[in-house]
Length: 256
Image (tube, rainbow, N blue to C red; front, side, top):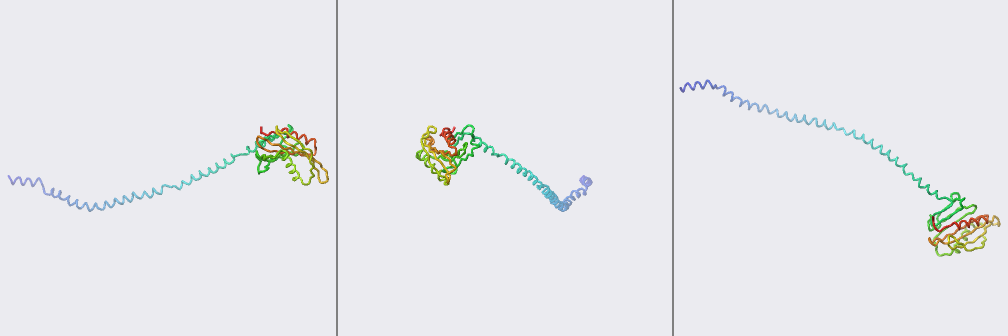
């Protein structure tokens, strides 16, 4: 019985199967060296992956960005459009408007006849004791229907109207050294309810010809503490007296 079992076992389990089972073990040992070069291929694949990267770096072409620089150029074209806007010429036009028959500036008012105008009177307004005229000082000259008129004003320094008249008369003599001056009568004067003084004079050339006359008036505006002097000169004594009376009666120590 024991021998039969041993034979049958030898038939059912042949030795080559065991050999085949043992044979893969050496094959596994042989496979490992053959597969060793295959991981070497893996870094080559990594290299291939890194290759598209430089190609990607070449793709971004920021060189096309300078094109927007052309958009900044039209901004300069917008700037000159703003330059014609400040047309300040309109501000200069109102200065011509007040030139009527009434001079209403620098703290007082001078009025001419209705048919006269300062616009056609060669009006000039400059500084008297300063470079520019102001409410405290200035010099006003103009022509008024054949009479040359000079008005200056300055701060009242305590001088009387007669002192101002005498000073104005001396200034006329100094400004016209080629003329002979002859003083005439003098008297009181009322201007805008203010006490004043006046005097008259005659002028002629060195030969005693080309006679002309003049009237000087002076008064003080108490509210503004301003001292004023008015001189009117002309060849016609009658017209000169009329112009002088019109100026003194139409004068106001305030602006309207």
